[in-house]
Amino acid sequence: MLEPKRHLLPLILISLTAFFFYSYYHSSLPPPSTSELNPNFILSNPIHTQNPNPNTPNFTFIIKVLAFNRLDSLSRCLRSLARADYLGDRVNLHVYLDHFKHENGTASFDQKLDESRRIMEFVDGFDWKFGEKLLHYRTGNVGLQAQWLEAWWPSSDDEFAFIVEDDLEVSSLYYQFVKSLVVNFYYNTSNYSPSIYGASLQRARFVPGKHGNKMQLDNTTRLFLYQLVGTWGQILFPKPWKEFRLWYDKNKAKGIKPILEGMVTTGWYKKMGERIWTPWFIKFIHSYGYFNIYTNFLHERALSVSHRDAGVNYGKTAGPDSQLLDESSLDFNILEMHPLSGLKWFDFCFREVLPGRIIRTTDNLESFLHSLQNQSSVFFISLFGVSDTVTRNMLCHFESLNIRNFILMGLESDSLSDLARRGHPVIYVDQFVNSAELYKFNSKGSSFEDIRDILTKVYVVRKCMENRFNAWVVDGNMLFLSTDLFLEPTDTINDFIVTDNLELFYARSSSAAEKIWVDEFMFKVVATANSLASKDSLSHDGLSFVYIITKLLEQKGAKIRRLDETTFAMKIGSSSIKKSSLGDKKLVYWPGQMGMDSIRKWLQELNLWAIDNESSCTAVVCHKS
Ligand SMILES: *[C@@H]1O[C@H](CO)[C@@H](O)[C@H](O)[C@H]1NC(C)=O
Ligand SMILES: *[C@@H]1O[C@H](CO)[C@@H](O)[C@H](O)[C@H]1NC(C)=O
Ligand SMILES: *[C@@H]1O[C@H](CO)[C@@H](O)[C@H](O)[C@H]1NC(C)=O
Ligand SMILES: *[C@@H]1O[C@H](CO)[C@@H](O)[C@H](O)[C@H]1NC(C)=O
Ligand SMILES: *[C@@H]1O[C@H](CO)[C@@H](O)[C@H](O)[C@H]1NC(C)=O
Ligand SMILES: *[C@@H]1O[C@H](CO)[C@@H](O)[C@H](O)[C@H]1NC(C)=O
Image (cartoon, rainbow, N blue to C red; front, top):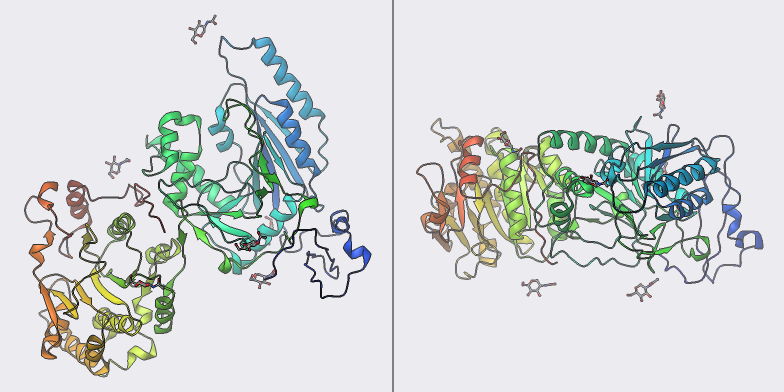
């Protein structure tokens, strides 16, 4: 990619189709003609011929301006909106004017009445030639939360809203940019993601997760995804906004508060309560795993800036937060959109998230391992018979323990697909065992269903060894309490760690281990599993991977450390346990057949239930990365 130049670069129009784009010029190229050099050429010749929206026939854009008592701010805001190029599209302008508060003591009512009247007169007289203009004047003071929430109920999946508080000023380029963005990330199915709830035109500056990362971006990054909502110029997509309104309604009715521990914004909520709306939206976004598109235009530039005028949010005027990016300072192609697959995703800690990693084949696994961060152990979590809720609770513990290198293993399901969308890598075991490379191990031709779990485990361990990763194979019916035992076993004598009565197994990446874990060994594991599977005497929990492996490794004379699970693990569900009896235990576990309600009850008692009623973590825990 070319580095953008500081000075204004020439623009070319490619006008054969109804599309256009800017382009960079390299000094080695022949000089462009003078008409091509005029940067105003495109902008003053909008392409609104017959059909302005060939690819987006039902696309509708509504500007929702939230105003209160600041005429000067509102007039600056509306003028900037009217200066934008709307490409011939019909764009409606809705102004929501909140009522002054009936408080005594401050300015006289007469003054306030007069101010409201002047604002209404101004809006009434304001020339909006792009579509309908509507003024909604409240009868009482509703505050910012209701102003935002009641501003919009999408009338279709093609209606988009741009929410603008009155002290904002937007760039005349904003609409062209937003339109390209929507065409690329909403209407182009290859770049569409149901996780995206909108786009913020403000400059991203704030990380709400406590102890989160500094916001640092590569200066070639123009667009990125970030969970946080931007209140200074936010484009909302219809479907997620409807979901939010319904979610808010439900939670509000049940008296549930938008408390998300570990977030600065939760502190705001505790102070300001229902005067603000962002804690609600943030809790919703966290719960649903959604993201917002942000721009990174460098040099503190953005398409929307807040003047931070004195008012509801600021006691006194704080001045603009960013530089407005306009035509005169444009030194790159603002309409150039990239495939979604090339964008980075960041969570509330500004930590990178990698969504959509679904491993279906042995090749997928190979490239996944190559992409892993430098942590020398990988956890394979077997989710057979583990409920979605229990899995999500486990993932919250992983977040707080900072366990990052793990893969969930289970059958293809909506639940696993949703976890992958949220950034948790997944192996679809039912598809994975059909990889040609795995077929050869099932020479007896028995049903893969009985042994696919074991076949997958034996194979992933081998892949880890080949790629110099240690492998932990663990069961979803256990919960780690600390990482002492797991992250970096210091044992360099033994190549394997097994536990007698737990599905917990460790294979070190060493040449000795690799020499054992060859095809012949894997054939034997599968054959043993097959012969055990054909017996009727299987336990409730099915075949034990650890049991089979331990037997065969012993026959091979492998260096094995046997752990007595009672020294580091605690079983729940039999006798009553108190938090204090956990002592310095490293994990708790429970029988596979234990019901969800019992598991929750036990874990709640031990303070290990880390999810709310919607199965989302009750806290955000940031770690520096
Ligand atoms: C546009 O809206 C009309 C009427 O609702 C509908 O029949 C049509 O299928 C829509 N077109 C697209 C491409 O969604
Ligand atoms: C001022 O407000 C308080 C509380 O709302 C009320 O009790 C009081 O009567 C008001 N005083 C005047 C002069 O309006
Ligand atoms: C981008 O970053 C590189 C390295 O930090 C720096 O040399 C370059 O000047 C930067 N470019 C811009 C446009 O800021
Ligand atoms: C849709 O997006 C893909 C990937 O970015 C791109 O290759 C393709 O040209 C786009 N299609 C249209 C109609 O713009
Ligand atoms: C990877 O981690 C190991 C051990 O923690 C360390 O010695 C090595 O330098 C790291 N490599 C890279 C490329 O960071
Ligand atoms: C969560 O659900 C349980 C039962 O389903 C209920 O008793 C509890 O009050 C709910 N908690 C919240 C915060 O809504």
